[in-house]
Image (cartoon, rainbow over all chains, first blue to last red):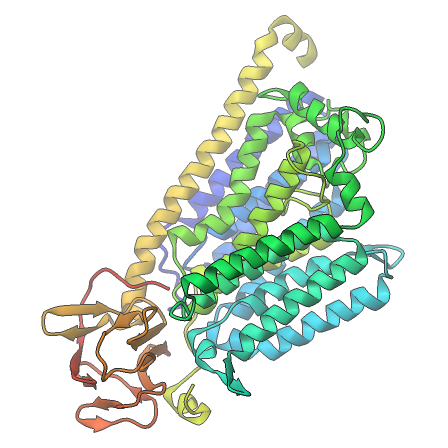
Length: 426
Length: 150
């Protein structure tokens, strides 16, 4: 697409709205803490960041600015939340990771905005995927998911997410490239996707990190559905029934064969063990109830004393201090990022796959986190993108936001007819 | 100003201010949503320019080219589908790159004719080019219409 700034939507106007929204939230912080130096520091940093973000976006103005605007809004809100939980202390680390996530979004956009080039780089994505898997396998140990570098801890499994989404995306040309083995015709790319999914499932079983398995399963499921759109002639009703029965069988077997710690979580009645295994969820539910519609006020919550209050049960912490209304609004805003593809639909099948993968991951992550906080499902330990504390999660979400932006503002250059001739038939 | 005392005196003041702030943030989000709607309209116009506004015409029937890859064939999933036995399941693929539409044979048994000549390699399409797929004759025309999106 053309690189000129032809977007009729005024960037300064939208960014002014972001500035207003953050100002409104900062006023609430001021109502809770008074006009202190810490409040002024937080206000200055958030508002100056908005201002700098506006200038940066003005220079790199895209045809689609919705993702950038919403990202800027959500990152500022997230910094305010994380700085106010349980008392005012500027969340410097969270803020820095937010900034890096914003930059990562721009970088990943540049990397994948051209679907032809991005797909050409698929061997590189496979390499990154297996390198990350090897890192998890050899460096985090058999029962851990973190790498401790002393000054910082990294969760490599978070970085597998964007790479997996890149693997999930495919083009029609790739889907038409079939191989034959003993009379069996198959698309190598689909086989690789199934293999990568199996590798992730096996590794997560091994590392006891089954919480994020539904996230990967959702992305893989969506990718396969999108690919089967070009194979649907072969998907007969009988095969479909066999597939559904197979999935149900695997789910039931996984339920029964799940490790003891998973079984324990699945069968725990939190109200009969309020000080034991049900402690976190009881506190999380109580906090939602105590917060009511408009919360106790920023910094006035008590859930912050419970483990994972800023990560796994951050929804409850927001509910307690800022109220259910604000918490729901935050969730809607984060969901707005993948929903942007509904307003500006992708123009290539590769970008459709990318956007669908990111949407599936974001939605499943949020569902697991919020439903876990509300005791509708057991705790899974996954984060809400951009809101929960955690650098790895923040960076990985930033990269995936860049994919959404690429789906909205693609660049369709780089493969001339001569190159197509060179490549031969699909 | 002692805000705590103020809120104790007027207990609903804090809730009212909170509600106002939250509604204000919601309002900002709504405006951004409306802006996204405008982006779509603009995106459609930009796409028409990027794809030169090309469409395929068959008599009075028009097939807009609204995605970077358009599959033509007998397969039910084809973007432009012809249920003729002379047409292969996956017959032709139209690709947009560098502002040019290219047609290529992706395994058609009866081949593709462009301006009466059978193509063996990807070929750039120009306005008024005649494409023959099986018995169907398609003409590359410029126009506007509802797009076929990915």
